[in-house]
Image (cartoon, rainbow, N blue to C red; front, top):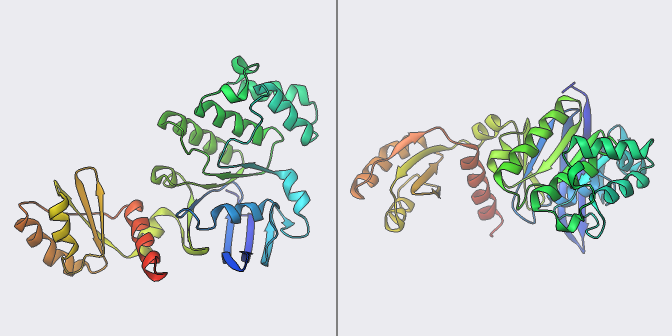
Amino acid sequence: MDGTSAIAVRGLTKRFAGKTVVNAVDLTVQTGEIYGFLGPNGSGKTTFIRMLCGLLTPDAGGGTCLGHDLVWEARAIKRKVGYMTQRFSLWEDLSVRENLDFIGRMYAVENRWAAVNDTLVTYGLRDRADQLAGSLSGGWKQRLALASCLLHRPQLLLLDEPTAGVDPAARREFWEELHHLSAAGVTVLVSTHYMDEAERCHRLAYLAYGELIAHGSANEIIAAAGITTWIIPGADASSRAAFAQTPGVTGLANFGTTLHVTGRDAALLAAQLPATAARCGLLAHPVDASLEDAFIHLMQHTAQRDGA
C-alpha cells in the first residue's frame, strides 16, 4: 500500500422505488489494499460495488475511484476496473480462449493474441484453452473469471462474493493470487461471507441495512465490538437454553460441539457463567474474542435495532 486513495467516497446513497439500499456510506480504500466487504444478504454490498464501477449512478453523495469522479467520469473508471460478479457471467458456449479473446476485444487490448496466451499460461488455463467454459468445474470457472478480469491489466478489482460455492483448496489458491496482485499495486475490494477470508484482508467494512456499521482492521473491529467471549465445550440444546437466560449474556453461537457465549459486561459474565456451566455439568473458559464473534454480535445488534 502506498498511502494514496484508490477509492474515496462520501455520503454514497442509492434508492430503489423509494427504499434506501445504500445510505450515506463513507469509504476510503488505499492503493494496493485488500479491503473486505462483509454483511448479511441484502445489506447493500453489491449495489455499492456497482456504483463504484459505474454500473449504477448514486442518488446522493460522490467521490473518486482511481482518481476519476464517480458520477461524471464513469466511462474512464470502467476502463481501469475489473469486476467479477457473484455468478459466473462469461459465455458458457464459448471456449476458455474465445472468452478471453472476446474480453480482449471489448477492452481493445494491445497485442491481444499475446495477452490472451500470456493469461492462459499465468492462470494455468493453457491445457483447457479449447474447453467450453460451461463445462468447467466451479474452481476452474472462478479462475477463468479472474483471468478475464485481469486481461486488460486493471488497477482495481471489484469482486462480489467470488468464492461462493468453490472448494477450500481453490479458495486458498484464489486468495494467494489476490495477495500477489496486491503486492504488485492492484487494489482489491472483495465481498465475502467467509471469516477466514475476512481475516486475510488488510481492512474490513461491515454493512447492514445499507449502512456502514463498522470498519477498520480485524483487531480494531474486534476491539470496537467491546465483547467478552467464553466457550463451553459439550453444550447441547438444553444447556444452551440455560446460558441464554444467564445475566450478562447477549449472544450465543454454536461452533461444532462448542458453544460461544458473548456479552459486553466482562465482570458479570465472569461471575455468572461458571456457575451456570457447573449446574449443567460443564466447564466455561474465557477466550479472546474472534472476528466471527464480533460479526455475529454486530448482526444480532443491528437486527434487534431494526426490528428484524
